[in-house]
Structures are given as C-alpha cells and as structure tokens.
Amino acid sequence: MHISPLAKLGKNVRVGDQTVIYDNVVIGDDSVIANNCVIGEPTSSYYERDNYQNEPTFIGSNALIRSHTIVYAGCVIGNGISTGHRVTLRENTTIGNHCKIGTNSDLQGFLELGDYCQLHSNVHLCQFSKLGNYVFIYPNTVFANDTHPPTEFVKGPTIGDFTQIGVQSSLIGDITIGEHCLIAARSMVVKSFDDFSLLIGTPAARKTDVRELKDEHEKPLYPWKNRFSRGMPWMND
Image (cartoon, rainbow, N blue to C red; front, side):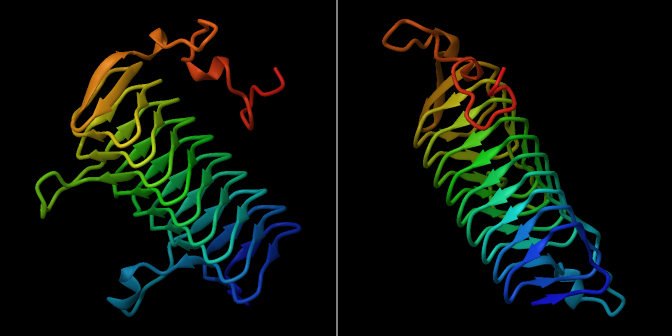
C-alpha cells in the first residue's frame, strides 16, 4: 500500500493491500478502497512533460471501490459510489451521487453521469458521453463517439433521465435520447429520439410510447419510477 502525503483521507477510510493513492486525491469519510486499486492514476501528460502535477481527484463519502479498480486523476465522484472489480474510470469524469459501476466496465473519460445511475457489468462508455439521473445500462452495452472513424472531433451520446438501455445495445455518435425511454436488448441506436420512446432494432426505430406498455394486470409499466423503488431515494415514501 502506498498513500501519497499529498492525499487527504477522511474519517474511517479503509485502504486495502497493494493499493496506490496518488497526489491530490481526496477521499470522503467512511469509504472503502479495496486491494490492488489505483486512485489518481496520472494521465498521459505525466509521460510528456517534466513539470506534471496530478489534477485533483475527489471521491465522496461512503464509497465502495472494489479490487483492481483504477480511477484516473481529474475525476470528481459523488457520495455513495460503488464499483465492481476491474473498473476503469478515465480522467475528467464527473459522477453524481449513489451511482453503481459494474465489474469490467470501462468509462473512457470526459464523461458526465448524474445521480443514481446504474451501469451493469462490461459497459463501455466512450469519451464525451453524458448520462442524466437514474439511467440504467445493462451488460455488454457499448457507446461509440465516431460514426466515420477515424475523425478528429467526436462527441458521444446524451441520455435523458430515467432511460433504460437493454443488454448488448450499441449507441453511436452525437445523438440525444430523451427521458423515460426504453431501448430494447441488442438495439443499435444511430439517431436521436424524443422522450418516452420504445426503441427496437438495428438500426433502432421508435415502436410506441412506453406509457402504452402494460403488465398482465393492465397496469402501466412506465414511467418505471411508479413501480420500482429498490435502492432509490423514494423507497420508503
């Protein structure tokens, strides 16, 4: 274990074996950084100039960072984050409160995630993507920011609040998906869609308004906030 003297750890922070915490890292109270993690990993500039200084890296309170996770310098992470194993959070990523990032997920930097986002295992988010609040992304989903590679200037997808993205989906380019959308499994989304869209297919097309979807008792399935509360701030309302 190596903790830089320029790092600041809050009360009751636990750090596991073989973990490295670099300069200018701040970790909030009651957090756990497990074994073999790297927090504040230097960016490529470290190898390019002699006067490199690590950008400040912030992790909020009550974090659970599981083993072999790497958080690059310049990340700002809210309270209550949890990661699976072998997660990579590249530089200048901003993550809100109470987010969950699953095992083997790769967030490629310059990203924005809102509060209560949940990324399941093996999710890849390209640079310059943006997620709103309560966005759930299921396993093996890929975001890409280059529709005609290689391109000099790229921008990833923007996803609205409460949208659900099914397993093995692909979202490509500078597109905007509205709030409360549902993207079906294995869909490929290459253009923007409005709020409450059910998107299916390759390329994905809008099939209906998700508010038209009903369960076996003819109760509306969406907005899903009205039927799902596990781990959400309205759980005990």
